[in-house]
Length: 104
Image (cartoon, rainbow, N blue to C red; front, top):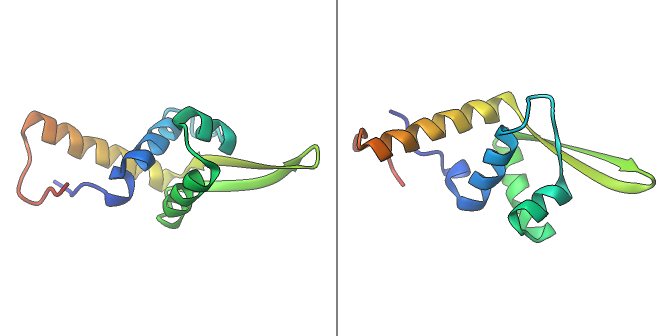
């Protein structure tokens, strides 16, 4: 069994990745919508998104709509695989089917 993913396991990042994983692979969500969904400040959300982007788990697309900046976020294939693996580790822990390599 693999270890818990420390990038995803952080509670706020876990919520962000779970919300993105619920979307279709071709869908994106607006930065502001994520902030409202999880009651996060822009700075807090930005820091978490940067960490997830650095790990290759999400893609951030910046554009302008009616002369206003717009930031769209989506989960990468790598991010979807990492989330699925993380969920499997958590499920194994809940079943009590884990070994000493799993760290929290």
